Amino acid sequence: MSRRLTPLQAGWRLLSGNPLTLAGAVGAAALCVVAVAAPWIAPYPVGVESLASTLGTTLEPPSLGHLFGTDWHGSDVFSKVIMGTRVTIFIGLVASLLSMVIGVLVGVASGYFGGWIDTVLMRLTDVVLAFPSLLLTILIAASLGSGVTSIFLALTVSGWAGTGRMVRSLVLTLREQEFVLAAVAAGAGAGRIIFHHILPNCLSTLIVLFTLRIGITILSEASLSFLGLGAPSSAPSWGVMVFYGMDHVRQAPWVAIWPASAIAVTVLCFNFLGDGLRDALDPKMRDVL
Amino acid sequence: MLVYVVRRLLLAVPLLLGILFLTFFLMQLVPGSPVERLLGERGGTPEERARLMREYNFDRPWWEQFGLYVARLARGDLGTSVNQVPIAAEIADRFPNTCILALTSVALATALGLLTGVLSAVKPGSWTDHACRFVAVFGLSTPVFWFGLMLMLFFALKLRWLPSSSDTPSLAVNLILPSITLGLRPAAFIQRVTRSTLMDILRTDFIRTARAKGLSEWTVVLGHALRNALLPIVTLIGLDLGSLLSGSVITETIFNFRGIGLYALKGIQDRDPNVVMATVLLSSFLFLLANLIVDVLYAVLDPRVRYE
Image (tube, each protein chain N blue to C red):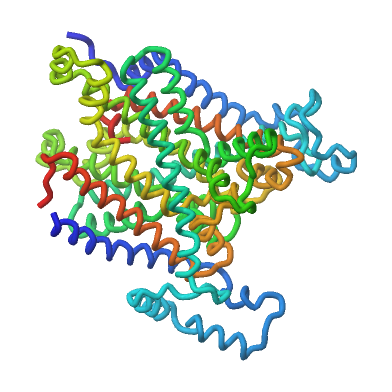
């Protein structure tokens, strides 16, 4: 009989055997490193635009001095993209985490307690799922005004429902399993059963959902920003950079293309990683997600 | 079956009301009333403002406003936008554009997705398979606006083959880039599902029988296997069509395409509650309808599926 692999070992086995997953993992890790070390990697300081524009180097095409060219203010696009990694990855991770937390809370409450709680929460989930997701995100961001908080709220409120539905179905199956019945018989309370018995068994699914969620969140943030609803800042996210770059896309396409490509590559990395993890940790989900 | 369809439609009513309520609630959060924005810089006299507030019911408490809206909606009246244009007329003007765009995109996606899916499944592990799968992964991960932007820059600005926005009259020409942009993602999904379903079916006994009878490989694949793989593929196509029919905000923005998505975005930007409610309602309704049609198609395509 073969030795049982822990999910982590199985994950590693798949990671090392699947070049796309490995590429995704390496890429995602590299992006996180860039996000942390951004100020040391960026060749030019970001945010002193007025100084640069007086030197007359606005909208300069890519060269050795400015790898990705310069923008309307004369800032180095490469430096801005590097600094934007920080903003984009931060928003992607935090907003995904927030929507996961809400989704798990809703799913567990719904699946474990059932009854009217389940009815109310699931009808709410139905509403959010049937709502065109990008429109909902835009609507929330627009009604709360521009700012980082409203972006987070918009991404979280429109993003939890799928996770909620998924976790509920997991909890419903787990709740009937013998080890949970045994815990109930032993006198364990709801909190103990949920945190010690049910959630640990959802973990692999949650990891996969989270990884895939990051890509979706980054895309939603980028779409919001692309429509002019992003958070304006001296260190803007990639989406905001694309939005401003669109103003001069005919004379200086590089200002929009580089941050847009950064988004594409990042989403690609997280999707490769998520797909690979899904196959490794939870092959049953292959048809569901 | 009819009972099932009617019940599903009835169940959709509270769901749509919930969606309307959520939309209404969010529009209430928007700072300032639409009347101020309508009057704009000239400000208007207090009487003028009061008249407009009364006309649009903005002077009443929000629950009354919502009730009045739903009552009017029940009579089939979508109301007017804050600049006095009837919303139904605007939607009637734009919806055909969105329909054509959605149908072209889905047709493109189906053709591309089925072709690459079948090529992939017939020889798994071959270089054709790898190439097709790479295209699929690319399609799934590419941000729509990035792809649209690249297409636009390349074809419209570099090669000057196509116009980059819809200001030239010909719809046929303006349709090409937006449909490719919009169709890429559905194509990738269709490719994936076709490949995996077809591969499963090609391993079954009746396929072996068909081959043993001496049928040509293409008859086996297209006539026997693909026919049985259609169910999940049709599901996907139906759902894609449902979501594309409600308009794509991003694609319509990039190509300045006069459709429902752009109208919804304009409504949100103008803080125009009636426009936003109407477009959200239309989108959600089409989404739910597409789900229902797909479920009904199940029963049509597969006699084993029955609804009570």
